Length: 135
Image 1 (tube, helix red, strand yellow):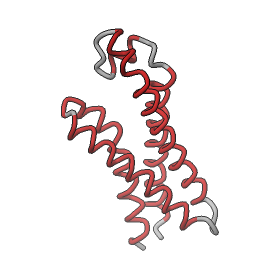
Image 2: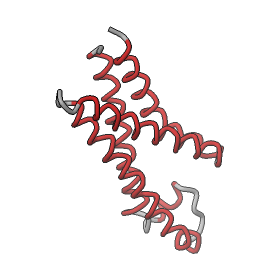
Image 3: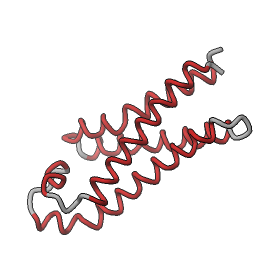
Image 4: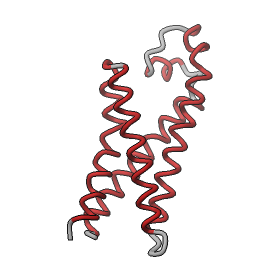
């Protein structure tokens, strides 16, 4: 395993986890703020009220992905748990990446948000895959 590439991959996965925690906070904790609603393209208080249960639920999905990635990163720090940690990190990061692809294909106007959500886990997966194959 290439340690330098593994560190880069881990850093990008950690960044992805932090971004997903931020999204959780926006969707599940701060949804009542008009500024947050506008960030997600919500135009009226009525729309915000209708979307609130969805946003709350979606926020927790983001938190769970972040927790999975972070748990995998911690496990990668243990020699005995390293393989399971890599598997968990890859699963969480690929799930984040696929969610970003769903976002951009379903709402092309959200390309910037999809890039913010998807580029860090993509880079994490690439660097970790390289770390496993490059000596």
